[in-house]
Length: 428
Image (cartoon, rainbow, N blue to C red; front, side, top):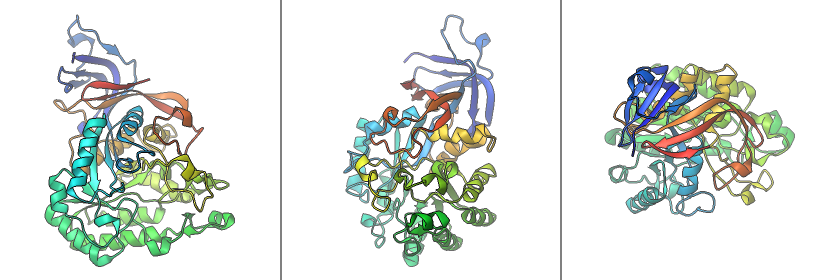
């Protein structure tokens, strides 16, 4: 690999407190050799050719903490190759994959298979999670210790929640002993039973069963009460309501834990569902505009630590059904950054705060050396024209499934190039 020189870029790397105009040098091994304002035309060899970025932005490769990949079992929805292509087009170079495949990722042999497939077919960094309970049944714990030794980054039951309080206390106790990361989808199944969208005026108007915000709140309060006793590494996967933000803000004064939010809940509300738009059937559901504003404020004041795509591709047949029967979830990894930039362009959140939630914050929670451009590290980064307008068209999406929640939406900000280990893997 030849050395690469990028000059005249706006570089934002929150991990290293970098927010300046400068350049980036990638060495022959695909690692960061130098970065920042000290890299300019005056101090690189005159014989070397360089790429003039003319004010475009360089961000560390994004780390998406919540991604569904269809292998094994659901390759018709997404596979490692299509996921990689979609991720790279959105500037995402590292993903945390969910265990709800078929079969479930709950034993050592499945982890070995997943790692082999990821290594052979994926162009990005894959960090797999395993299930908290065997077969996602919420009754028997998986072997945390054995799975961790095989490279599992954390444990979650995906879109299912541990309902049994005694089991959750055992899980937290074991996680504390093993320094394992627990990722919980916070939703009380009894309160949310048969629910399809936020419980409120609109669900009543549409005649759909609602999911009350208390279903989320009550699980968060339970788990944080347990966390006072069992101080393990604990992360709430996604929150969706103003009440949840308030609880988390209060509890963070004396408890150590983290939480995330889906870009969907930051950008959309229940009104966007209109007349039964099934592509907006999500979990957690879209809630009120007041809830959305509270979530944005939670990012702004750093109560919420990470933004995720909650990328859950579904084939068209599963979405072109009545709202009650349609599958839950949307494809979102390739629009994650552009949709997040909307919050910068409308003045809601500072750019470096946004990039922090998409890069070094998830990496810190996961304890992985990604999401930064530290000298000597693998050069995983994206080049972004943050003012470039574009329109989301499903036929242009690279994900195998096209169930985006924002089809035909006009966005401002587009990834033009993505590099992994110094190698350009995506270019407009």
